[in-house]
Amino acid sequence: MNPVGNGRIVFHTLGARAVVLAGSVTAVAVGAGGARVGLGTRRSVTSIALGTAGLPAFPLFTADALTGRIRNTGMLERAVIYPVTSSRALPGSSLAIARRAAAPVPTVLDPRTTS
Image (cartoon, rainbow, N blue to C red; front, side):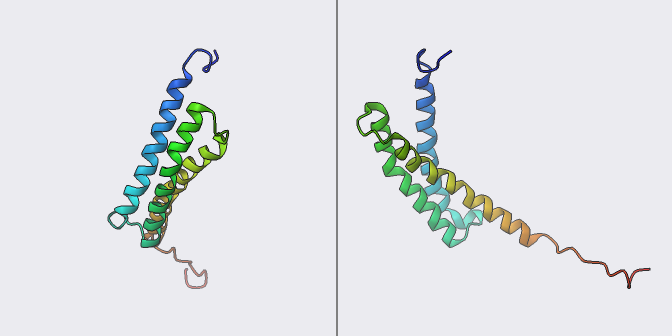
């Protein structure tokens, strides 16, 4: 079945736009509350910048997809989704760094001192 021909593409389109919009807003919110979740200052500012960068591109992407007049759908789609994807890596990498710093350092046993 062709999702475009049977009208189901509307559900994909609405879902994709909801994810992009929610992702940009979430990136700004995570950056704003970064200190509470363990994000450093630079990562918080970067998250806010990424979310803010995706928001202005969203109406352009939506208008292009609905009207087809701009003809840069791929470029605009990347402009809205790459900031969302990149902003997801910031808290994840911060958690990984914090976990690594908190993990005990393994000791190397010297075979000469063990019997």
